[in-house]
Image (cartoon, rainbow, N blue to C red; front, side, top):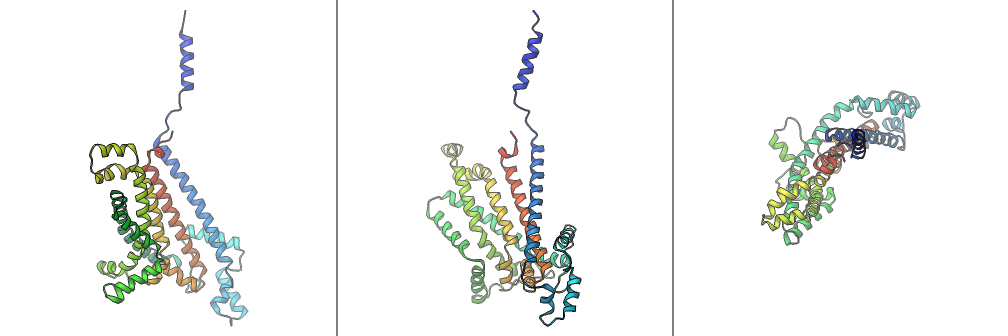
Length: 343
């Protein structure tokens, strides 16, 4: 009796019942990255619509605001034509968005300067300040979170919790003025104004930026510390951590070697969100310390009703925020094997 057909049939059935081949992790990550980027672009487009629509419904007329109430109708019509305000709103939106994609935000309606050239040094200053605050805040918050877990339930944990919670409860303008009152007015240790320039030596520049930097650190360190603490405590409840304790390993080593790598994903998420806040949420801090960044630039031109500058600054802030969130998503995926490898 020939059993060859039966064997082939069994082999075919086995292949049909077998699970699908494991997909490539690299291909899966690439698809996730493309999806995140596509979603980010759609979100940025939606934000651009909101920004443009929001600036169009502002009360009053830009040309009249520029020329004053005594302006003649001919002068107002001339300014409106020069600014392109006589065109339909959809056409102006398409022209504005097309220019923004090419890096051309047009000219300021208040001083006729090129917006892209004016914004570049301001954006550089804001990124500089945010980076300086992040260099202090991120390691400090992770260290405080580890200390809270090492001494959970003790006075160390409670003291750190109370101090950081009090710091994030203070409005930024209030914390900034408190720092100015103590370090500048009472003790003359640091300058109250953070006006910097490219010609300033690095040491002097860092000292000048210290007070706005500390204000930002106070605003974000509590949030990052508490999320680090929660993420580590969740991991510390795992059976393998209990096994590590039963083997007699010291607590700091268990946290550093075993718990922290497995808590990286939520920590990275909250760090990225706070980094985005450091860049987008510096408006109040820059105004208080007269720091020449994007926030100060935006506020100055909002007062002048300079719509093109407001649109450009809003779109850049939105792009930075969305980009940092995409980076946070990708880092979280890379740090989590269950998300990194498809089933």
